[in-house]
Length: 312
Length: 179
Image 1 (tube, one colour):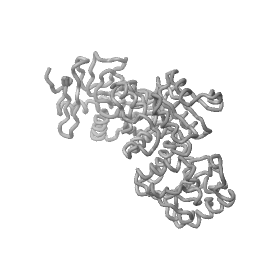
Image 2 (cartoon, each protein chain N blue to C red; image 1 turned 135 degrees about the vertical axis):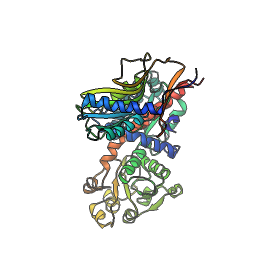
Image 3 (cartoon, rainbow over the protein chains, first blue to last red; image 1 turned 180 degrees about the vertical axis):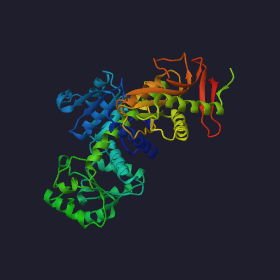
Image 4 (cartoon, rainbow over the protein chains, first blue to last red; image 1 turned 30 degrees about the vertical axis):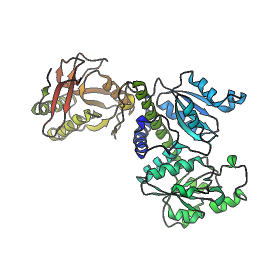
């Protein structure tokens, strides 16, 4: 049960039961967020530090809002304006912050596994807000939560993840999360952007967008992560867009309605056209809205763990 | 001490009938009123109450809802783990007279959390409290019941009140705590 969960570092180690409990708790928070007063005092006396060693808009604002609405005190840290620039190590930085009596860390870091490394070396609860190309667990949870909200259940649904799967932490977390909830997952993209052995995770692999969309109930469009690409994986963005960009024209050719998702930020006109991103099938803004409720649920459930620890 | 029955099935029925009469005496046909059961155990009482209200006063105008106070408790991370239960309030509580229903009034802390949770839905004109058992002398906050089934002078430690809701056998016990 999440009540005994100390950290949220990755989806891989989470049970289906824990995910369902996070969703059920998020349902209550979503109801609260739609009421006139959106705040609860659940985490008063609780201090959360948001450590962002990498740029972020949605995740950072979403976590910050979730923490504020739970009544926690928060401190924000961004590597660009900190002593990290002066050569301080990650453990030293974190230990210094912890000595100021911080109860929980929300961390984004460009290095895969940074959160797991930290969890082994410092005594604090950690929520992974994205570590390099490894995992982005809260994004996967809110994606699955949004599918559940839109289609009633994740079980048995066919979900295709399209785009830069190779560099995407969202893709990996989504694959684990959706599979745990009983969905059928496919990845689609140019061969250079699909990890070679990904089929061993039990996902289908497709290189033709039309075929993938015809198969699926939900399409999760990923951004091309140019900042993580040190070599050219495809000839040009224009060519990528022509083969893997989702346009209204392609949507019109499908003989069924599918749900369109995107974890953001969107590169309009590259992986998805504005018409589709803003269209009726898109739940992109619902994903952002659900993000706050899901993150409130995660923080609330993790905070209960600390209680158990202090009791024993 | 030995466990003893505080309220038997017949007495529970009479108390709920009395509640219906008291509410109609106070609020007429309950226009502008809402009966809201507090999760988890107040809901059992509030459901029976609204059922009895429909039976005895079929023309009443009260709205009915259920409220969870988990996120507003003051003992979070201080005792047992609290998981939320659903709140169902599908009407506007603004300017309504709310009758908050719980089974046992003891320290008053869960009612305080309930009032905070209620105010999240809007600003009611007035909030009244209805309880089946009022354990007086044990209050930790300045809260009192407007309608109570029975008032019990019990010790704050070593005893607890247990309400059993069964369709044909509603019983309320005063029991020793397990050691």
